Length: 325
Image (tube, rainbow, N blue to C red; front, side):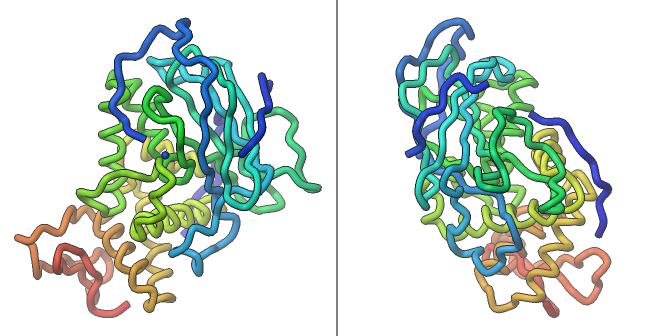
């Protein structure tokens, strides 16, 4: 399926610090000109966007940011979540994707941490600019800047990945509609999990131990691969903004159809990857609008649109594709 190429404008250094997870109930925001955090340390791990089809690695954490990758910490306005101009930079070190910001002082508790899509190398040197929504001719794809928005009064240890990238887009939209940070985060996290078919589970992608939950690790890697494939034709920001505006992948038909098509092709080619196939079936059921597979629906069959020889069956709390792969 082809998607029209669309370039979207997105998003100097005040300090470059050495590169080395959280609860989410928050108090009312303080005035932006009030120094609420002084000389603090913020640390975490960053997962780079997929740089190639990584189907074989959907069950493992294989995409940590490369050594030397740049992470930006940007202070946010406590009402709009717009950047204030106060920024700090760090680098990931070693093979674990870990980074640290030391001795940071901020006038707002809210920050956005973002990972640059490239690590500095002979091919690319950072010029201090932080606008990466662009088409990369060498990669033949648009690039993504994964990030996370957090309240540093509640957590100073984070994970940056594709799911927090989507969470951040939804958080910003909901707060601009007037929701508090706490309410917006609870809602955004629930919507992300529902959107990929992981109902009634806690959102833990903002914490480094999310990788210990196999279904969450698979979910993160599958969504990452879907956005990688999407980026051949259009900016990943298109997906993030669509989710940010609606809290769903199913309300924008090109995204919905693209995701279903990519997962259908993958599961036909890899029927023996049972855990990933199970997740994809649940994700597609959500995209089709079937909702949660409640016990009252056990045995119910739903015909998959445009494929009358295949059905979605609710069985033991999970939607599964039946009648062929």
